[in-house]
Image 1 (spheres, rainbow, N blue to C red):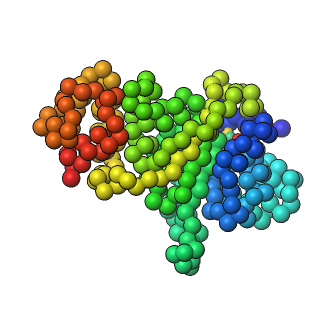
Image 2 (image 1 turned 135 degrees about the vertical axis):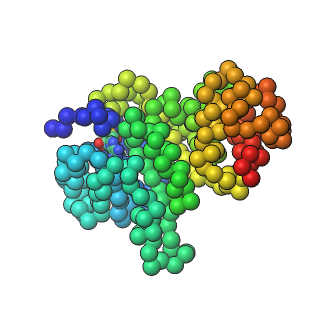
Image 3 (image 1 turned 30 degrees about the horizontal axis):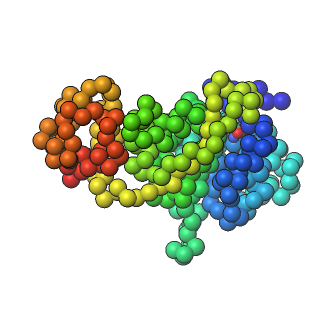
Length: 272
Ligand code: SAH
């Protein structure tokens, strides 16, 4: 018996039809270079392993790791050699080093990018997403279980209440897609909120105009710091009224009226 630890955001999936839907959406191919974040007791790990030649997992809770390994081996003894456990905080895991180690000695045709999946601990989901944005060049795609409210914010378009910093940041660097909702009773213990599956595919359409990730992040954060205020007010420490106009925007607009490409253009005008 493993008692769920609150501080690790542990809510274990128990509904097999939900688990199968997630794994089907991920559509693992045997040779994929897949990493699961927060495998827990292995609810997703086991069905993923059955479709993969190998699977790396990143798990912070050292007490749960022996149970994870046992569960995976119990369902199929060959999983012993397929499952690679990295005992570390995902925020400290260097995906770049991992990617180059896995690809070392391979021709460019054989090189593989990362497929990252996980039922993320909800208390660290935003930091994890931002951490992974830095590695987007070496990522094929990502599938995450998140709070539904967070998924709504990520995929939201201008004009919606949920449109904001998260929508802009994720949509600048990825194609975002909300796949389906997952109710609280699919987990043990049941969380208080609804969950949803998010698909992210890195996209590079704006890369030429993003000159400094940290400054871009700051621009978006400041613009949304007071939703009701105009750009002229919220951005007064970041850019001039002239720069706002050069980007084709009006200083009397509010952040929530700007599209992703509006933000990218404004950043480009300020930092090119
Ligand atoms: N995937 C499992 C467990 C989800 S609960 C399932 O769906 O049933 C979230 C998991 O993330 C737990 O196993 C928890 O220990 C792990 N975790 C929490 N914080 C983490 C961190 N910073 N880095 C890596 N794993 C973490």
